[in-house]
Length: 592
Image 1 (cartoon, helix red, strand yellow):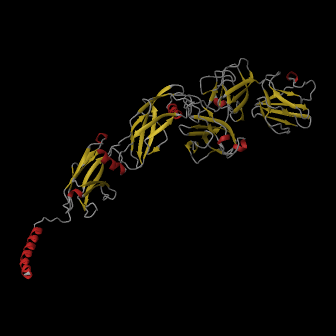
Image 2 (cartoon, rainbow, N blue to C red):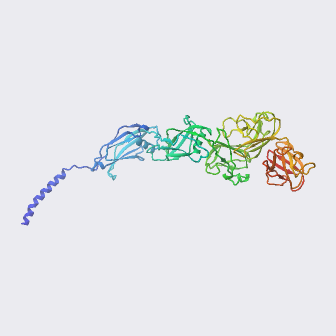
Image 3 (cartoon, rainbow, N blue to C red):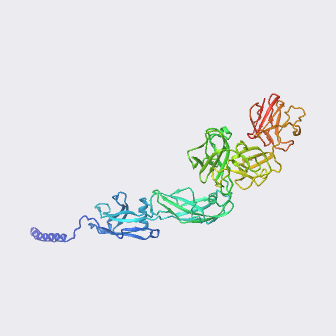
């Protein structure tokens, strides 16, 4: 019976197999796919900021007819410079769709990353690469050409406050903060941001710049820094002025855009920026160790409104081959060197002089210029022998270079106005670093000096020889001194002459004036006693003391001073000596 059942089932199974084969044969069949055909909605696009979020070009393509679900097919839209064979293509991935639209910012970022400048047209090529998600079965479409003109896509600048009143006392405290939305949205390289500024309404015709920053979106300025921006655009210290700021953005490939403008009204204050002259000469000149800003001499600040916080200068003796730099403050944090008259922050090049001498060293920290020339001072004007003709001043009416920022000169003055001048021509009004400096004053002796201004020194009431001192040793208070120079007496307890009382000006012997600031006398001196020099016949007159530290050397020039210091010591051996007092060089020599 079992065998009979098996025989019965064989025909049934055969029939089922035949039906199954027919069912499979009826299913549709797909191959491995084929290249798609790409179409662009336009062949040319001129982009603008207004298009940043709008669709500007649509790309569509045919189906690759893969034998998989079309929703999981991957498409890469590739864009590159024409002729580059897509070697550096930018790509946009699309999954499962046969179309995509690029916004103005999408397309703009592609060109910026290629390094293309805004406002110029550039030819691109576009294609689509289709594949499975695992990148198998890749097919490349036809190529479409697209001409695109990019735009700058500038940053949007804002400022934390529109009015500020900085103060010197709070110079290091927070002032204002600038912030911005990044420029070149979609650009993947570094962007250098520089804040530029100028006086309001000037349209950045004479712009200044803050130090640049890379890939930042804000910049904070202290009260001192925001105050300096006002001063740099000629808002006088102590007055109010409006300053405009904008943001310059630059890609690493050189594309540049400028942001909107923001304005800040600044109630400014008068700053104090100090500059110093460290160098190889310091040790020899008595300014501490070489190349030490902490002990270097300070430059004089030019306090004129147009030069404030910009021009600095000094009159100084420098030995042959001296090299030096200029520092802002007594550290190397901000320092300047340079060549050929051009100053540069952090420059490896030292400023230098070849020959020894007295120099005027001037720097312009804003325009980055320097000037080194002979340091000198002389008398000019109607009351002087030179008249109002600067070429007549040197050497006949020159003053003596006594020390750093110190000139002493004796000259005959008539009843007329006069000035002091450091060059052989009048200033030209340029306020440049190499300009001649002339000095006058509306105040009497002891008063401040006016640089290149209208004021003369007042005419003397009595014609005669006068001693004049240009004194900038205190750089905070550059002044002049003036006194009659009709006589010079040797006073003290070291005079061995008949009729001369100890410390008696009225009976003390007078020196003889021989010109050029030089006085001489031959006189008997006692050993190991004290003397000094008095420009009059009673106490209260101008007088000179010892600056040599008590040297008793014979025949050696010793430095002098007039600040009430120690007296001069007479030689160790009494006898007859010739004394030469040189007010131009500020020395005294006691010789046999």
